[in-house]
Image (cartoon, rainbow, N blue to C red; front, side, top):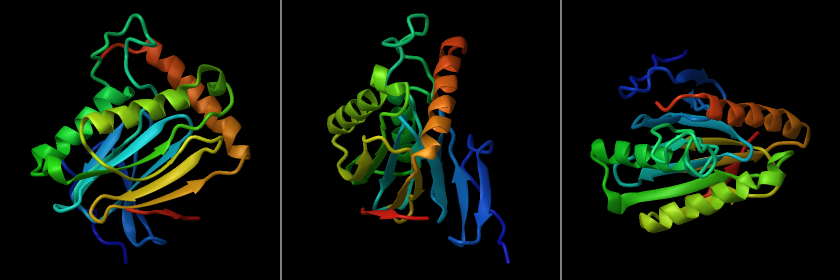
Length: 208
């Protein structure tokens, strides 16, 4: 029998959360430009191409979350958008919002740990090297913040699915078959194009 969905933190009511019988948990789906933070025993799911997801959590308190960004920082790619644009489509803001969200709910900066995924070179993204730029950005950001990376699966040519449980720190990743590349490449191209048109506003485990 499906239990009632645990209450999410404020600001995350728009995130889709559904019961998954296989994992016997609720799963919250994070799309490009979003992040999700929780203290519940639930999973966070996302699907990545050249994008990066950083899974960050307080390993003592058992709260954390996952973000999903396509570009490292505004300003370097969009001349008409300020470098401090407050939107999770950019890594600098996505990282800041996730970390500050954990700290505002009682987390300690000294207990923060990270696991990172994505940054593939797929399709047209190979020409602009967005995946590698994203990887370099997240390495640099976490190093500056003194947040250790406990596990990672980045680069290569594979799209990925990621599941993360912030209460335990457990992350699972699946590299997708080649037929998924064209679809994800098209999705990310559309997302990248939409950015320029929008105003400002532990161990890794494979799974099926």
